[in-house]
Image (cartoon, rainbow, N blue to C red):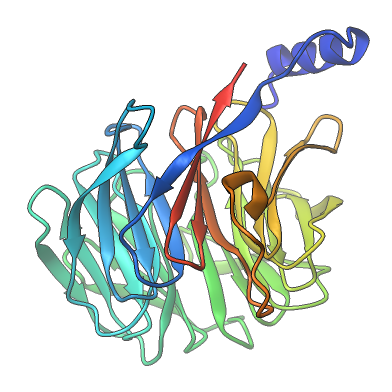
Amino acid sequence: FGSSANKERASTNSFDPTTMSDSVTYRGVLEGHLDWVTSIATSFENPNTIVTGSRDKSVMVWELSDDAEVPGLARRRLTGHNGPVSDVVISSDGQFCMSASWDTTLRLWDISTGNTVRKFTGHTKDVFAVAFSADNRQIVSGSRDRTIKLWNTLAECKYTITEDMHSDWVSTVRFSPSAKQPLIVSTGWDKLVKVWNLTSCKLKTNLAGHQGPIYDVAISPDGSLCASGGKDATAMLWDVNDGKHLYSLDGGSTINGLVFSPKNYWLVAACDNGIKVWDLETKAVLEEITPQTAGKEPRKDGLPFFSSVNWTSDGTGLFAGGTDGKVYVFELSA
């Protein structure tokens, strides 16, 4: 991540104005959800399957296609939650997914059958976030009850973080992909990013600087950086290990979702008014995707348009969840 090849390419681009970098083109929509698409999960093992969560209380499994007309088809709707689904994540083997819901529970689903394998109960209020550890043996969740819980796959809560906890709702929790430094990163409505030591479940660092509630955090593929964003419309980049603020990028409107590209040295933000793609070498905006890109008008009721974002595992496809219930599909073309 940020390898010399990337740096080399970036410097070549800056010297040769005729070199075109990859650009993002609109492919179409996946239709099926009836309310905000809150999260989109992709997996390396099953690159043609994506899983989405929605405020319509359901989780949907989609099969992507190469069809020029239709970017994918709905394969299954997973039902059982009694409240909006706020987050979904796929296990690294691509067989299972976890969902977090405002109904205070989490569910582990078998993607192939659509059945609930386990129900996780323990949070006392809405669960806003869920993540799998790299080895899939641990699950972390964050809630409106301000706690972070660690679970095993049998739905047993192994630890609840209450010491140095967020003083407001926990919006996101993520495991760092770095095996050398087992960490959890969380964000809250208390304007803080917190980095936790996974082994001891103790606080390592508070990353302070945001001026409002933080809605999402993304960790770079090598675990060295994280990016946070929210109400203050600023994406802040941090060195995870040193706990230092590196720089900030202007989202232009509230940031609802963030993701690093698995392929390029890029950061993508789903903002109220559109999607921004930044080149982190130059800090420049490479692409700005607006509702008009997808042939839509911006919302006039003051609500956000894009609520979530994610890449395919190879970084060639980009998905954006809409507050209109649609998943907008884009692809990278050289």
